[in-house]
Image (cartoon, rainbow, N blue to C red; front, side):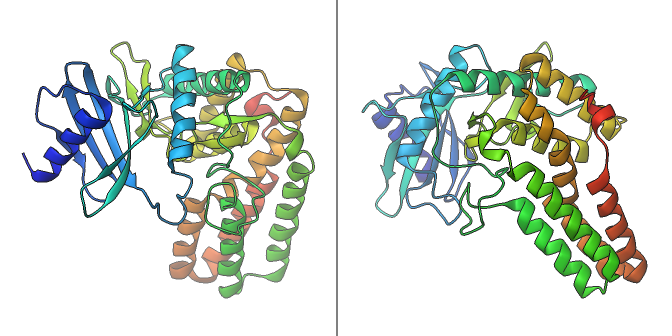
Length: 345
């Protein structure tokens, strides 16, 4: 066993009181380390991040780790598959590991049982939609808040790269407009995109602060889940992007995500319909939330960062034809109707 692994094992025993029974399994090494540990108390994952977090992740501090622990406990107490955090011997949901060269802020959580989760079909989409609705409903009933936004957040202003300030939608819009201008997109198409974008943003922003918001996991994607023996979602982990979010905003962001990465042989429209209907079966939307679903869905998919990056590459190699196609496709998305797809009425 390496000296690094021994250091982490010693920390698990000293800071969290684990009685180790097998050598540690280093799942990730480096500044952000992840260690699987088997002990007499069970199987756990010990995670460490630099105590002085890098730009864009300064929300990962001892105070916020405490909130993460309380939130995960509240979700698990309601029977949701969020993995529990364990308190350290000092009673906190984190501890400090100092090996003389580097200081880590560590957390210990239960090992997520089950197999790696992949979204295989519409049934899996349904499970994800139900879980999202359950998480939102339960979180609304708690008084737990992180005090910062998520990577889905809108209207932060982009003063910094920190969660809640960072507005990926606005940044992606600006990047796309810049790419189209450099490629000499026809002015009438460019102006049409800008006019539609700002109109959609205004529709949402006018009511944004009145919409229900709560603490959320912030990254409800398959790579953060495990599958149980009966096909269920058995584990949900990774709170690095957790924060406070307008709930219908996260719902629509995830509709856009899963429509962009649908399961095999599953049309995007059916994916969105399945996820949305599963969600509202667990948490029906209020009238004011329903009023912003279509504006949000017209606003978010056209300016997903991965779509903008793809269009930039196509424009670079495809010339004028690619520029016009990208602009017209964006306008179509900004004008897309979602009422029948999601059954909003």
